[in-house]
Length: 252
Image (tube, rainbow, N blue to C red; front, side):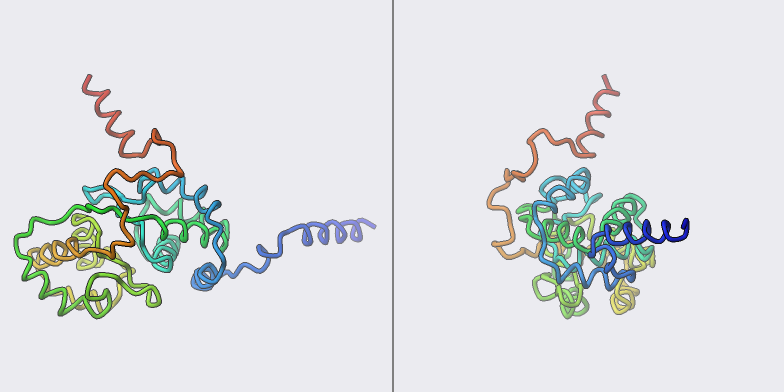
């Protein structure tokens, strides 16, 4: 009798679980592929993005100093791949890991919602650029080594998971290039690692400077510098703002 009751209870639990959860693939690549094929719910994406906005800002513009990258306007496929790589340990990012873990725990639909929301945010129209010291050198290195994958204007390739790098902050670009060179960023394309192996710091800086000046298509940019994400309150407090306030309080 106890065995029969246990079986009935198990069946009740089984059939009370949403079918989407049972059908969720286990392999991260399969989850990413499924997320790309799902119709996103942007309202849910907006809710999920609140945690991301603490660092990346409600607009997705990151920080001008390059600590946090601009993610607005990035290809949905690239956003998903980076989240998967962080979650799987292929990209070291202790700050992001808990967020990626939570995102994947919610399944492919949540990932589709979040990534689609971010991809649709307009990009910052005035990202920070480099010093402009050797742009001709940067242009040559870019066209010889980077153009084939990232495109002539840094537009990337969503089908191949190559990121859009045009409009990215200079110091973020430079840091990522340095980390790829020393193999700290382990999820970089093998061809890219080989290409920049012989670059010195001047070369890396020149390329990052050139790329930071590549302009995304105007349709991808916010129409003015003061644009604010209407999905967030004006007084939404980001991590950077909170840190500044703490520092100011400490100086009083």
